[in-house]
Length: 251
Ligand SMILES: [Zn+2]
Image (cartoon, rainbow, N blue to C red):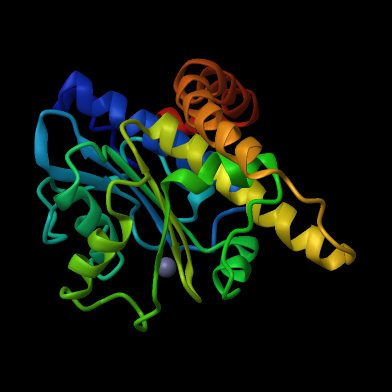
């Protein structure tokens, strides 16, 4: 039985734990988990060098606010926990958290659709509204093997630049944002864009052209829409949905 850490952490850390645990549950709900692999991480508010990440070996559908492991930029635990973090998995996250003060949450997924588009040389195509929303902040990072070498961090950061999303070629996708809610929203739209592209390609035929000036205006509108909709509109509804299914993520 997991012992709650509610009384032993700051109010802000507890809120970050709730949000991140909810994001893990939501990823499982939509089928975007990958057994115990891939990871979502959140910066502990007020502690730029402390982060919350999944207890390695726990299914995303089992994760609770208290079971999240608190680690530093090296992946070492900074709060006693019966669980271990996955230090190798944190290479990707530590790179982004360490370089981008605005990256409060980093989401890395290896969904089938995300990996499939990451395998395509042309990457994400501007064929759907969802893709056009994401494209302005999307970069690409070439595959270097399993990301366990610390020196890959700088190349990840360079490839992300000032953007919010990365396609990790032959591997998966990554998004980052100022809140867990916004990172979830970005991941959702990117995932949908990947699914739509694959289905459109599987359906065959030529894609309808979108005029360059229309693509430009959708890109500008989309960035604002995603930012506005994430935390304020989508997230509270998603939390209510999670509570109706199984509110144990709040433990
Ligand atoms: Zn991965």
